[in-house]
Image 1 (tube, rainbow, N blue to C red):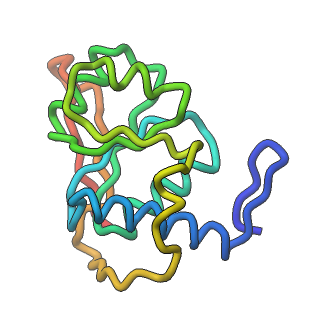
Image 2: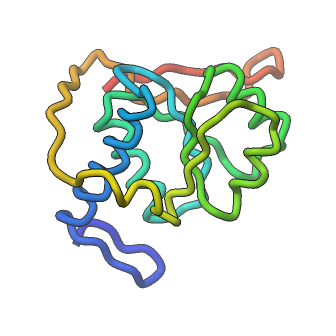
Length: 150
């Protein structure tokens, strides 16, 4: 068993397959080495699947707490120049209404992602490659992205 969340279990083979599908979807959307992919999800299996999918694509994930004020979420999306956002069905409407040109994918619906292959990817990741960017409050009150490598 790889993941347990609220009574639901996912074995390693399923986690690997689902995160590979997310990675292939992201690659089809132009995500490549160190491209920033915001993830706006509540705690869930989909959050872990999304993070692994971003990393497997070579991209870097940007965690966004869904409880953030819309202005902060909008700032982060602007600052990252995001083209794709991974989220959940209950949050799609809020993100789409931020008036940005984004591909917004709800990982809990999996409708689009199910069409992608679940086979292993050959992406090469190096230790100095960007893994994620986390936004802090910043000393000026303006959020600041802190870059973290593998």
